[in-house]
Image 1 (cartoon, rainbow, N blue to C red):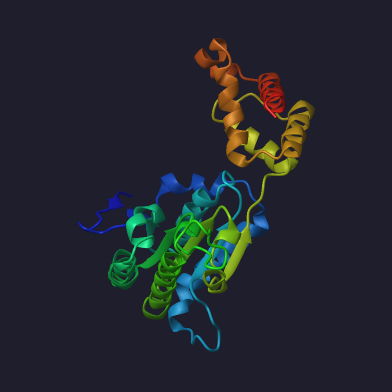
Image 2 (cartoon, rainbow, N blue to C red):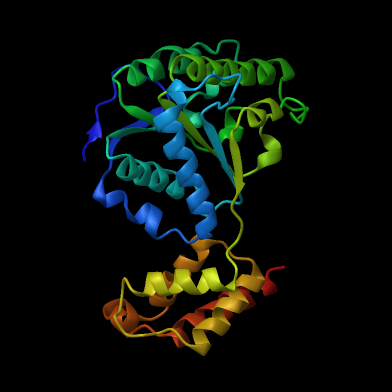
Length: 295
């Protein structure tokens, strides 16, 4: 499904995509997190997109926002897109996925005016919602927008921080009231950096952590299947997965371990189908030793 054209003069929106899109299925299927977490996220989003517009807020207060929190590299942003795509499949109807870059507003968020932020939440998003489709809005790295006012650095202007965060809170509230077909998915690499008033508006706050040994093994096998059809699961891979999990590496680093193994030898670069667990172990041990030597 091609991206939807962004109207000229619109700030902050990276892209608008109409889902479902078969190319986005991997964003859901190949992110390794607990099945119970995926089920909870999908149930919430389907419910919010299908039923929120008919609910009375006093009886069942639903703000239309979930937060995915966790360290960088744990798959939050990819999972958010996959979640929206999967929800579109479940609903059997198109969903607009709106990707917002909070770093596109530096002068507005840290200066005297929040006109661009207000325009985004009060005009642009309601205009998109007015098309009648369900809309999922990704607020990636939301700590850059809804900055914690109580924890703001002394190096920043507290007035600017308050105005910036208040503009976001007012905007989210406006969309919640006027656009029941819109649900926000926010991600955060550092939850204490997000303002508590923003978090209080979230219907769900879910934490993604570093993968455990079983998850590391699943990620390695999934990545290796891109390169070879040889069965590589076994005690050696499981031992490597346990060591990687004990070291506390994130999911992105696990997948990059395969790439680093390929980059370590010309033989694998020319013929990656020959990759084996021994290559991964050698690369892992080298990188671990290098990291220990640098500390």
